[in-house]
Length: 239
Image 1 (tube, rainbow, N blue to C red):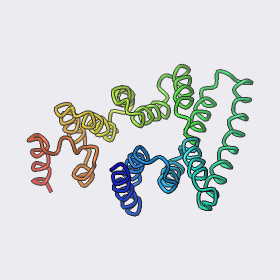
Image 2 (cartoon, rainbow, N blue to C red; image 1 turned 90 degrees about the vertical axis):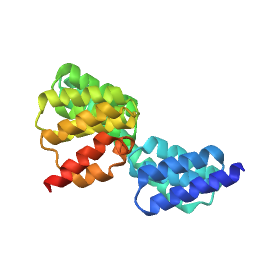
Image 3 (cartoon, one colour; image 1 turned 180 degrees about the vertical axis):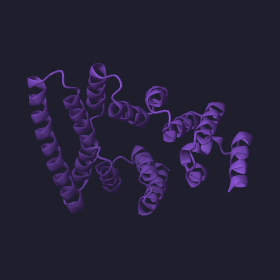
């Protein structure tokens, strides 16, 4: 039944949350909410995780839903109050930075600060817009390139994210994590050969976080490939 499915997803989400697996927990709770959107605990847990992830706008929405379903839900009320206070502080900072931009519109650093404030409240669209303004003024500004790569990855727009990581590589070819990140993004798209190629490139350039390579869930889609097994066997032979 629908309620049984919701209960299973909720249990899995709760288990992940207790084991500090917030991303996985959020996915399960969101699935539970699809099957039973009227469960106040599910809505609260979604709001709680989103609050921890600095997605404050979405967090507030789910916490309000939890309180609508159960007006005496003290935990939800307290967290919503904290969320709204944080949003008010960020909005005040945004207003201050916008005033600085009005006085000095060509300063790319102000737009970067504004973008980070939007990120902090979970307003991804405005964060992206401000990072892009920053890059229009200073195309090689690494903090905005990196932020855009991560923001687009979070939106599951992996090809766009990869394009920004590649721009970062042009500026910082010795940063081996950039190659590894691209390998992960190709794996998430189930593009096995591209992922393997970039993973090999990362290792060839000095990436050596072997335990992460073995356990990173972003590489799950390539683990059954002969290419991945070869990488691991070669790696273990060197240790």
